[in-house]
Length: 345
Image (cartoon, rainbow, N blue to C red; front, top):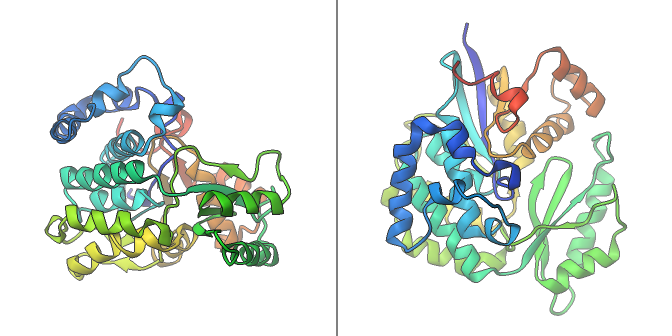
């Protein structure tokens, strides 16, 4: 019996110390693909992905860099997307932030190697420029119940700070019950000073993250468009849901428009991951939401996005957990206790 699934690819911040060795542990059969990625890195004088993954030691300073994290996450996530059990029918693909680039490859709009070129180029450009930074702050409580008034108040404070002289601050990613904000140091610091610490860890800065999905990234977008031509893009073989909730369909995709979005709006405007997940749920109603590795942190944002949509009557965390315990609808491949639910035996 076939199980339908929406595949969701993660973004930055998901390859951490526990993930070191992920490619070698899970994807020995895909080393030829990874060596092709190594060759692309070699052309740019960069360390091989297989060597980075096979290193003995993980350091945050090195592995959180855009030119290191991005290619590792791409390789791990695309490998996972290719490792699904035969009874799983992928009805759509989406991703969070950088995960959009991976989704393009998982859906066939980019070849595996061209997808790697896009990810490696953009990750390297982000690291070279490192314009601004990011922080995360929740608008829901720990029960995940929607709090639209709190969200509106936080975004109003973001707009207030952004209007101050010398301050840049904007919504970067709508991430389930979280707001990912991006800006310059003055903007980020002003928000941290204005909002209380909640859940003992927020607002939380993200190491080596630039001001993704804001106007500050316009120079990176322009350079990316120069280096990466529209001819890299092809018709997808699976539907894709972008960071606006728009669906790109096989056989009906304007590949020039896809290139324009990917290296334009997607880089410089807010990314609505919540809407992408909710669109996937409403339009495709899959049996499963499968979050590819590395890591499993994106699972929470997927679950929160479904709760915020009151999908299948799930209005808070407890209701989601009860439904998940009954029959898993969300599977994170980066979790060893869940991976086997969706991979080939």
